[in-house]
Image 1: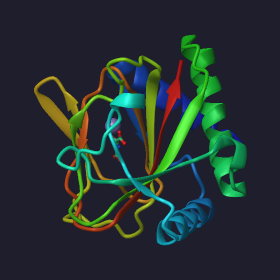
Image 2 (image 1 turned 60 degrees about the vertical axis):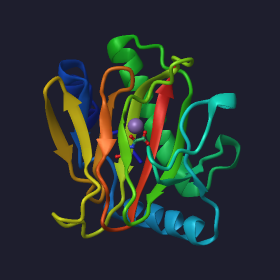
Image 3 (image 1 turned 120 degrees about the vertical axis):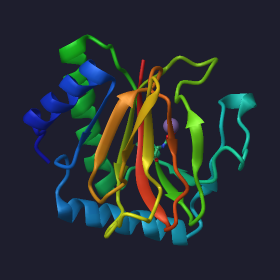
Length: 199
Ligand code: OGA
Ligand code: MN
């Protein structure tokens, strides 16, 4: 995959301007289909865990706050597709570092599945005791998502909010320490890959 500099540029401008950004043009349809297939296979194979909140010893599953399932990618054991995704995210990270001198270092990503009825209540991605998460990224993999299926990402901005539909191939990124957000209850199984650029 060649790094789409113009797309990175638009994302970076929006990140700087309002703290979040969205594009539908980061990945090819063929790649997205293949990635979705891989996610579904891993899920069916029981390779997901109920997601938790907090880090280290404070990590716990609180299903009143979030009710999704995750499968963390292991940098040492990436599949070919995961490697392509990872590479694209590394390119984006380096672009942001060049543009904003952010000094982003590691990245971490997990697949996420939100079963019917699940959600993630309003939160910030930066853990209280861990300031590493700087840029949050989500790529949605929901084929044929329809208005009424729910599962929107609600991004808060002071008194107002914007709802982003989790449609196939849509990529959203935002500042982890500034942007409060939530995942509205989904009425259909909802697929994505989510992660963070850290420093
Ligand atoms: C998260 C999160 C948003 C989404 O995993 O922290 O907020 O749209 N995900 O899946
Ligand atoms: Mn979040």
